[in-house]
Image (cartoon, rainbow, N blue to C red):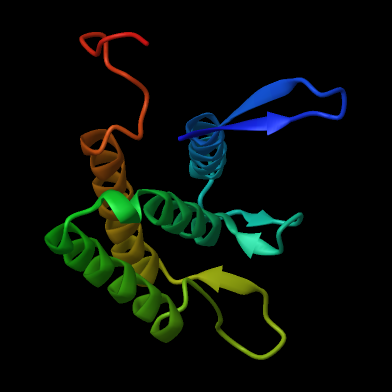
Length: 143
């Protein structure tokens, strides 16, 4: 989708929504890749754990693809998303063992959540690919 916009000097510029969507997708995927380097680290800038950022960025990728998904695709990915969010609320990854003690990772919770997060990330990348919202493959035709 593109729009012609009149500029202040009377000329017209093209606005291409697809270009900005690709930039948003790229930025989200870059953030996920950065957080995947150490998913259990704490990000001071966002005041979040990296695994939470990975989930949030994947949710944003999903929102970008949502209008293109079939009803079945939406139902399947939504079930996994809800299960992961429910799991995090019920079984925190970090916890205190005693009062005034530092946070420690709950290895069992982390291993379960990590496997779901990996599956969720792969599913979203497959959906982006299927609906042509990812980088073109070599066999894709050029512009």
